[in-house]
Image 1 (cartoon, rainbow, N blue to C red):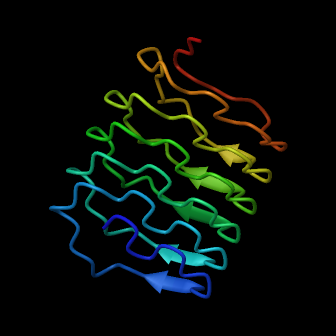
Image 2 (image 1 turned 45 degrees about the vertical axis):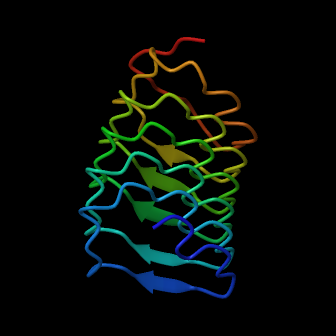
Length: 151
């Protein structure tokens, strides 16, 4: 599913509730450059076999909020720039993200200037060497909570 909807600049609404993603391993840049995408239903996505979510929502400037709490991320190794430049994103539920195998989360929330509601309490990053500029230009982030944070 790498770059499946990449550069679909006029796409506004997308319901993928009937997609069967159980065998998918790559979702890299899946929605990259979908600048006008507002609504996105990923509630039925099965991500247990996915190992790359890099730039998955890259430059989705108009996405405001969506729930990824059902994403199984235990096998994902690369989440770099996953939400890069999601300027209007204000709320994100990633409470159940498991990044124990991730080795790259650089720029994951880079320039998410309106992100103000995010729960990172279950995110442990002590084993990750690459998390440069993770929250760069996240102007509305109140407080960031991690179970363990090492630089």
